[in-house]
Length: 331
Image (cartoon, rainbow, N blue to C red; front, side, top):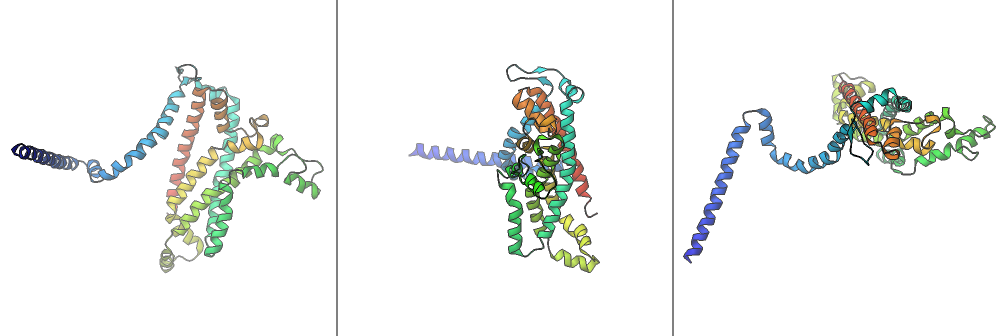
């Protein structure tokens, strides 16, 4: 009995000493955190940061680490069979000075991005703004109609049927019926038609998610702000749009812009589905197609990593530019 009491007393002392150590450590950390604002902020929100650790670990493992590895491999010759060999800036110099197909890919990507980026963004916002004014039930139905194609996996094949090169293609059938042409046009086998068709299809495909994001942003604007603005002298819908609607939608505008940039610079599957790989005289060849060629076909991973790095840096630069532009909205 005495031994049991002694053991219990020792356990109580250990728990008490551990609790005292824990309290003393917490008190010391609290004092240490007060010396700098950043430390204090971290200490006060330590529970939130601990909850973020699983996400940060996965984000680092599957996003940050691959980007760093790609950047490192871009300075090497790596063919998956041999160990990477450091070759400095050779891959970048070859890309910019001795790879005419890459220059064509850059030109095509820029043309697609310049047209589909701003135009798709503007059309998405106009459609969202107009549809937001509809009655609730009708608005939900029209929103579904506009968004449905973006979640349909085979929707792009419709465009292959529209621009089919025989008389059964919708475009050829319409033009022949109304006397505009006598023979079917080889839409996707003719160099001058490929890029415009890709732009049309990419513009159509980019409306879905952006449109839905902007609809959500418009629904989140507090209606009482419009009443207050009317009292303060706002006279028409355009002033409401600039001074109330757009400033309240900045998070959605930024998110939609990032999606638009990513989709515009990441065009590749559309050109492959419509015009094949490679397309006629590389008329629809994009940077992503060039990346797939060297990474997925030739397995020149160092060269492909250089292409991916250039694409990544371009997206970052455009993202910074868009942030500055959206930051001026309503000012």
